[in-house]
Length: 500
Image (tube, rainbow, N blue to C red; front, side, top):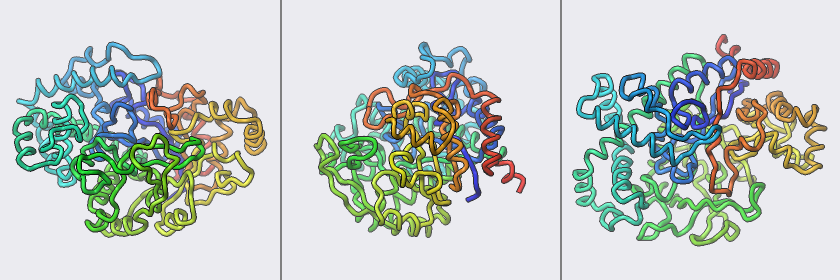
């Protein structure tokens, strides 16, 4: 990898009409801002349709896109909607009201489908057909659209509470459901065409400007998802579709009782017998959507924390062996090069380090973890080159918020190491990350803007009110110029790559 820099911001956090950030004109203007700031990467979180928690790591599908990311303004500009219908009734500044957005945006998207499905514009109709017939899409689209239509029919109930014949995917029941729900299935096909059409357009705009998109792939999928429903044999479930064991991590930096995620665990021996086909399709789809992809919870591929279903915390779990290199060796044979970044944070053992090094994936370091001890591997001078370094991630507080809540010893170590004052801590952290020898440095936009903890994206273990932070306006030209100067002096300026 070239020495480079980027910015972390999920599209839902962009400003604009509609109550939530989307893939339309504001996203394009943010691309312009990143280019003006000399950045190489725009890093985003997973793009799937989230459940009630709004977490992009807890989605109804590992393949489908989030319809809430569809730009209503773009649809209005294309003549499909009246411009005055774009903004929701309530739009709290600085936050996404997911329930309000789902209701308002969902109604408008259904109106678009109802008004135009019988007479789609020729260019949209061609793209719709091409999308459906794309082999990489057809592989997951039919299961997703049937799942989404059935979920709507059953009032949002999870698939393991549906009638037994549908729960067990009996062919006659599935065929009958497809006939009965044909229009609803077509509606969900249409939504997927729209969201990936807009994503592809945004990616093309970014590529023309020399900006790469940095995606994210969650290791686990939600129990209530099209993926688990359509591949029940690949997950550790009982005959009624309930998990026998669930995913989590033992006590760590974020929680004294560990993190109990609750996702069903894979039957890796079954996946191995099928040459990891489902995982290879998933990796291939993720790499089609982005230039570089972060592998969430990489340590789970070496060994994962198994917690018996029904436990209240993750404390009473045990380590189990993951697939190791076999998965990625098989994927390379099928897909070629794998531009992946291993999220190797948390409890990392020698087997995890060996696996990452042998696969040649860059690892991660987070500057907020650097000052708990003087020998921390997250200190910039101890970071190896094959690393993506962050001041903080989506799971961390902002730099300003972190410093305000840190103990006196940590604050003193940070200031002694980074220099500057407490008022300058966010940019001191960014300077420490950007001037390290790590190949890539990523800055959360909140730290560039020096925001406090009210701008935190997620606090692990806190289920309510997460993922909703949102910009009230795009960052200024002055902030782009300041980030550009830091990027230039640290040897990460994207212009040198584009001119090479």
